[in-house]
Length: 370
Image 1 (cartoon, one colour):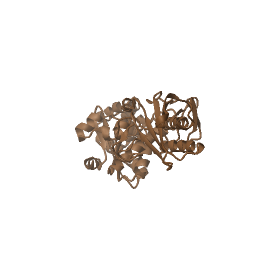
Image 2 (image 1 turned 90 degrees about the vertical axis):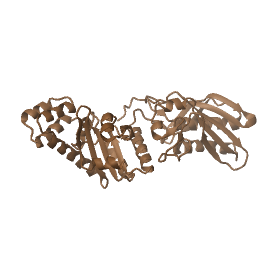
Image 3 (image 1 turned 30 degrees about the vertical axis):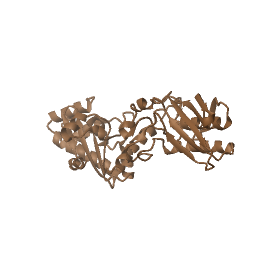
């Protein structure tokens, strides 16, 4: 849950819509606009200052910018300028044409909000921009067709620090936002990114969703399977949500790949592995060790450990690693399968120090299918 004391910000979509409204007002009103307000889809009023106004009345063209404010969210786009350039054609057709310019990325892979070849200006921001432009046209009783070009100088450099290159959005930032506001450290935003990546992979024909909490074990996966872990969808702690999303998108298989320190929690049915939610790693390792025949001394030593790798070293010393690992793979598979049906599921569990620890029987087959 977000801290109620943290300040919300506004999305690039809100910035683009506000700049578009201001530019259109200046185009038709013929006077500078210093401030503008819009109502976001969340119902929150967004009031902002207008910067860097440029007007060419003879060409029926006005450009202006809104400075991005992200509130207390650590957003790399914070403080950047989002521009809207608005021009009109007196053709009586009343169209609103939205396009991108400098610093706005283009979609190069399927499965995203916009089609391949389109500027990465998402559906809700497009709707917001069009709504503001049409209101201005109505207020001035105009039937012109209006072209809006959204740009963000410096966007290409900023985009390199975002997920855009990974998603196949090249050349700049995305104009995004479904509510128009940015919630600090939003869990919803993280899950939204997971959904976007899985949707994209499904659209590109993938039948197996291979997911991983992070990049721990990159060298192991490369050496063991010739697989670059960067290709996996990073799901952080959101095991359960990633299963639900993969199932809803129609994946046939779900393969969970990760470090023992995270995945041991899944062996206890824990679907959010953040330490603030649950941290019973040693208890779960010890419980599995009981089933593998560990002595009481081994159990005490495990419970005194501070890391899963340290505990696994004790499992090896006790000579029960094979039976213990089989039990861990079975438990992880049991819990993810319960949530994932009718998808087929598998897991690969490894350690930076010890390499492969456990895997389900079908894991290698799923990896070969990739």
